[in-house]
Amino acid sequence: MRTSFSNFLLVCLVLFGSAGICHGGELRKNFYKDSCPQAEEIIKSIIWKRVASNSTLPSKFLRMHFHDCFVRGCDASVLLNSTPNNKAEKEAIPNLSLAGFDVIDEVKTQLEKTCPGTVSCADIVALAARDSVSYQFQKPMWEVLTGRRDGKISSQSEALANIPSPFSSFSILKQNFSSKGLTVHDLVVLSGSHTIGVGHCNFFSNRLYNFTGKGDSDPSLNSTYAAFLKTKCRSLSDNTTTVPMEPQTPLSFDNNYYSNLKQHKGMFQSDASLLTEEGPADIVDEMLVPGKFFVEFGQSMKRMGAIGVLTDNSGEIRKKCSVVNS
Image 1 (tube, rainbow, N blue to C red):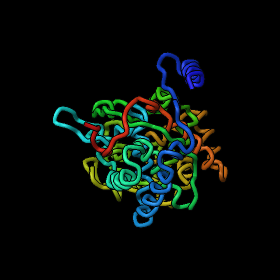
Image 2 (cartoon, rainbow, N blue to C red; image 1 turned 180 degrees about the horizontal axis):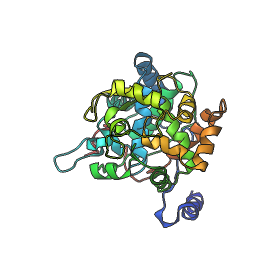
Image 3 (cartoon, helix red, strand yellow; image 1 turned 135 degrees about the vertical axis):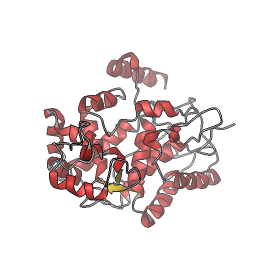
Image 4 (cartoon, one colour; image 1 turned 135 degrees about the horizontal axis):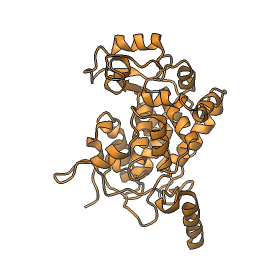
C-alpha cells in the first residue's frame, strides 16, 4: 500500500507540481463490496425512483457534484449547513439554486439503517450524479470509483472563489479547470452537461440587454435565439425566471448542446467562449460525432470525481450529510 501511495504522490507532483491537486488517492472500484455490499444498489434504486417522478433531477445532481468537487475537492462540503459561526458553501450565490438535498438525505438515511457509519456522503453525491443521468438509458453511463470520505469544512467565500462563473471568458475557465488538474478537453466535454437543466435569467440577461454597458446585446449570440430568450427574460432585473439551456430536448441527455453551440445558441457567456479559440472549438466539433460525447463525458466525470478527494483516515464518514459528526 505504501509503495502504491508513494507512486501516486510522485505522479501527482509530476503532473501538478507543488499545487498538488491529486486525483484519486485510494479510490477504487466497488469500495463497499465487503463493508456494505448493497450500497450502490440502494443508491441507484432510490435515485431511479425519484428521477422516474422528477425528470429535472439529473441536471441538479450533476451540478451538485460539479459544485462540490470544485470547492475543496469531492468531499460533500456542499451538503453542509451553515452554523452560527460559519456561512457554508450552500449560501454562496452560485449554490443558492442547488436542489436535490432531500433525495441525498433519503439515500443516506437508508444507508445508515443498512450499514451504519460506512458510506460517505461524498460517494453518494458522485453516484447520484451518475445514476440520475443513467436512468434515461437504463444502464450505468460511466464508472464511478468509490472510497471518498467527507470533509469537515464548508465556506461560502471558498465556493464563490472556486466555482466557475457563467460570465467567464475562455482563458478564465481554462485557468479554473487547470487549477483542479483538468484539461481544456475536460472543460469542453463537461460543459456538455448543459444539454439538460435550466439557466436563470440573471446569469445571461446581460447578453440580451446590456452586454457592454450601453444597452446592447452580445453580437456573438444567434439573433433568433436572442429574440426567443427576450420573450422569457423580460428585463435585466428578472432573477426568478428559468429557461431550458438546450431548448429542443431539455430533459434528454444527448450531444445537442454542441450543435446548438455551433449555431451560436449557447446560453451563457461561458458556453459561447468555447468557440473563441481554435483548440476548444475543435473539441466541440469532435463531440458532434455520434457516441463520442458519451464516452468522453464518462472519462471526464471520472477525472472530476477524483479532484482532491479525502481517503484512508482523512475526513470522516458523516452520520448525517448536512452536519459534521459531533
